[in-house]
Image (tube, rainbow, N blue to C red; front, top):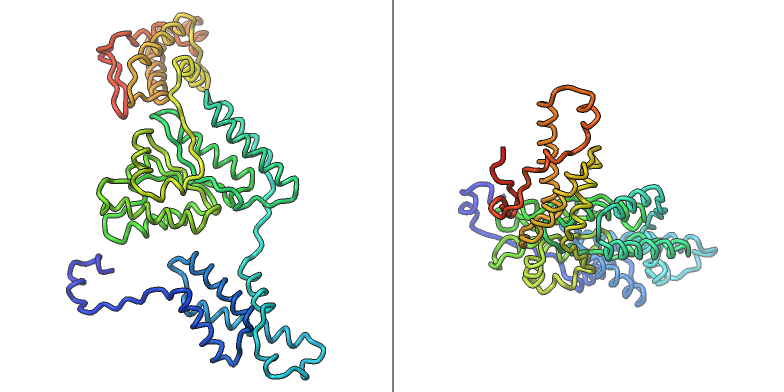
Length: 414
């Protein structure tokens, strides 16, 4: 509100801050409210009530009711006391102390109401098989596939023994790898698998980055980050290029986003997962930027650079997905070119992303050739075949290569 207009700050001369009550203060408020309601707590009931108050304080958010919350607890405890005494066969023979003492039983019932039963979400085998199919169709990543298969087996075992797995898994995960190694793709597939397993309530994926979490004013970043977490609750918050939050300047707004993330990851562990993705060197610096980060992430998935053979398999699959195939001569030339550029890779090498750009360019060349060729039966027969003419622009010359963070150039070819 004060940031919304430059003149507001100077108009308000006095500031009174009302911080949240501490747990011990809330306990004293409970005693005061009980006295006002003409009831008292048994020693065991008071200990249990203090546990409930402390648990609520640890999990509090901006909607926490403070004294109003405690008043509501005492009022419901008094109602439970009244119901319990009226259910007895001889309530008229109870003395004043018995009629006005909230016992452990009354608070225990209150605790049961505050902890509603969780939905029992069965395994969706159809969705699970779809997710596994997508995962196993990916080239390479054998270690990651094995890790996920182990999770699936554990959940199946637990479910067979009648255990509800909702909120029982903790899977805040670092996804570390160079560009184009499949981090985002795997995150999307894992969201589908976790939803199918019933270990997340909703199982959706919210994708964001620094821009989606950080605001331009003091105090606004925490709000913006919390809103994004709320959006991901019951699913996965995927933060791409997460290292951008860990600036070298501690006063950077990114640090405010990290602090907000850390608190919510701890307070609501199991209710949502954070997937933080980025490049190896950058993510190492990101984890070191805040002492709490390394302990909050339960798992690290490492995405290694593809080999030339794997990149060629990816290229063939990309073409096949668009109903194209390579002629033998085109296959050999593309294979040779991929091996060639792989020799000159650096940390900005795009892996599958680079291959996708190459395939897009090949298909473009092919389509142009098809347009200019004379209509014939031979043309119609080979319309989905990539020929050597479509790939010959990929020259094995170092001067034709240009690697940047975002793209690969193919030189000036007509």
